[in-house]
Length: 223
Image (tube, rainbow, N blue to C red; front, side, top):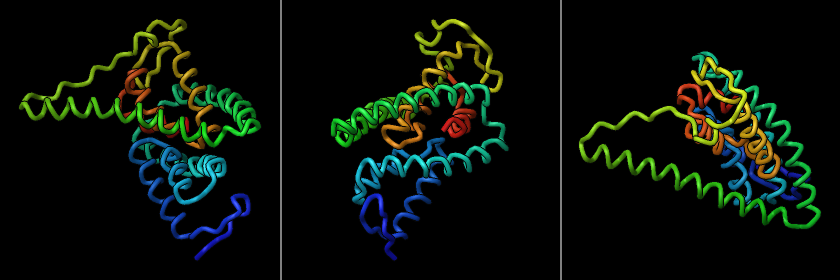
């Protein structure tokens, strides 16, 4: 069954779109990502123009994130203080991202920029996660127990002033770190149509030093 998309000016198979949304929603609940980093490129591959795909993915991310937050809230896996600061930063980031989007759209470079940013971000995150996975596989192959990851801030985060305590995450650090992270994610949301979870989750783990038990729920809350 085909449906017509007036803004994109093309017809698509409704079943394909439903299956795409269901699969992305499943990943959202499991890994704490809004799913936009998958939705946008999949829509582009399906033939949706990049600008329309980015905007459409942003609306889909909202529904997937809300349902995921309620699931993690029952397990006390949401740090509302941390997430609230990120939301404030995200609001600032959306305004900055919208201004940048208009400038790039007027210059006719927005489609090219979206493609380049996706390649760079996904490539960097993929390499980082692959390095840790390879180290873990080697440790298991040698028969040695896998050492527990130490929860510590990145030196740049530890140097920031105005520290406060985040009780749910068990952290004592500057709120400027999650605020700036929220600004960056907010800009990504506008430019790429992603919730930012694919950047936010590793950043919360490796930069902020948050525990995995609260990262997923807090990421979905911010998204």
